[in-house]
Length: 119
Image (tube, rainbow, N blue to C red; front, side):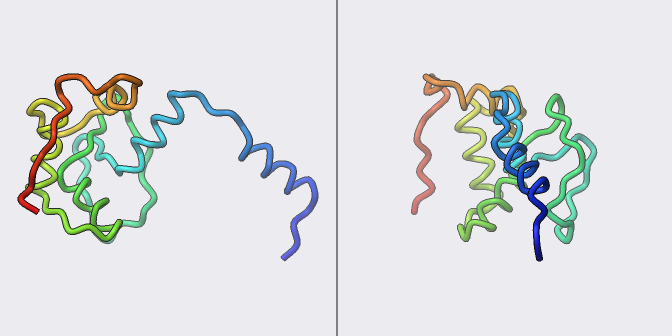
């Protein structure tokens, strides 16, 4: 089909729109398909996610395992739980503020360590 010139201009302006660091981190957090509290994950659900409540949403072992599977990696939920615990100092989920701290320059504090899964 054809695209009207104004539609093209509007599209380019939207794509080129500078976003804030907060928006960028929220988009990166959304990549991991975090679950809102009380939300039941449906494996047949489309990739569209309801409005993200960054104050309460968390990345879970199940969600992380699903992302790995979509990327072609075979990682179990237990391995994902181990990764989350190693990265967070023992927590079983990753909330937005923890995710945000991982993305800050120099965030390689004492919580970062290697995890060997025997592979």
